[in-house]
Amino acid sequence: MDLPMFRDETKEWNHALLLYDSALKEIDTKLQILSNEFKVEHQYNPIEHITSRIKSFESIAKKLRKDQRELTVENIIKYVNDVAGIRVICSFTSDIYRIANAISKQSDVKILKVKDFIMNPKPNGYRSYHMIVAIPIFLSNKMTETKVEIQIRTIAMDFWASLEHKIYYKFEGNAPEHIREELKVCSEITATLDKRMHDLNEEIKLISSPDGYIDYTYNPVKYVNEEYYGTIVEDGIVDGEPYHK
Image (tube, rainbow, N blue to C red; front, side, top):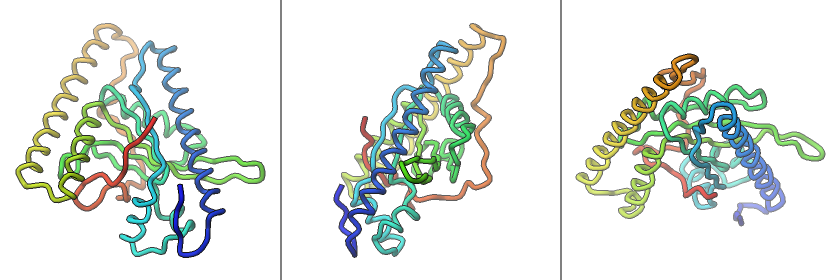
């Protein structure tokens, strides 16, 4: 990805891209291992699919301009938390907290920031679970902690967010009021669907295996630092681009 700078930092940016790409591979591997474990040990896989992306130059530049910062590699690494992003799609709400718990327990994963937009949806109806983590990347001569944003959501949440994203760009962020209201209603419908499907699944699990049953739904991960971070802009619209396999 070419990134025009105020000064020539091509070498530094290529090195940063190497770190971000490596961090995505590390997180993806961790998630694949968790997925395989659940399949083997529990005959159940909470992860439907995983997508990832490197943030586009336009989005990176927009973020720094918004914060009135110079477009430099140093500022990108320091202030843009979601250059590397990975999205995990789950079947049920309880799976989201199960995956978040599993990630947080890994000794080489440092949790930097968390936002739970499931317990506390954005005003426009957006729901998802966001984690900013840092993981060590070991190169031949040094180790560098590199940030990755992890978004965890259900299929229903992802469906709503995808449509909302398309509508947002169709109207360039100025959708008519009745469309915004309808999107909010649709968000409530998807939340109800998620809850009913979750409750049905929990009942099936309880009937099938009453011993050792665990309900993760009302046991979200708690962190000291749950401050706002830059993935969500003022109106609650997701500031990102499509994630790819």
